[in-house]
Length: 146
Image (cartoon, rainbow, N blue to C red; front, side, top):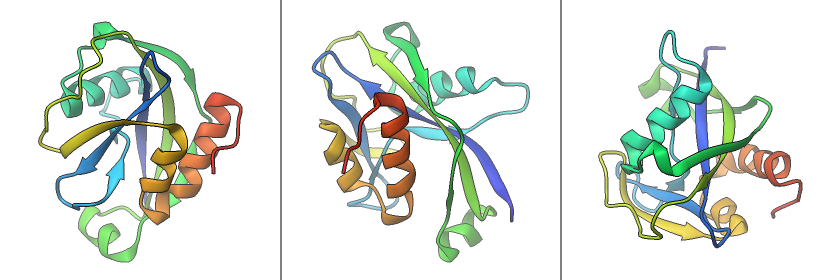
């Protein structure tokens, strides 16, 4: 099985809400900012780069406060064929956001963003990522979000 190493960002604002984006290529599908780890890059560098690329949030407004153990999900066959990977192994980083409470503008990856309650993020995510999101939130926040 070919698994891609990846990072995902759980960005928490001052109100305790999490930033989630609606995928531009899959309308109605929401997820956390995420992406692969480039050669020579640490996971910490990768998550900050991905957040900046996908949300335009300046890394100076982000503080890494926690990281999950690696979590793996398997991609549906149609997505796996397009991506060349059978699944992804993700590290979920909890990032505190200390900037202005505005919603980021649409980006290349996302058509819109929203600040949501943690359980709403899990409710919106595609079915094949739900378990990883639930497990990551339990690890990062020490609580069950269903």
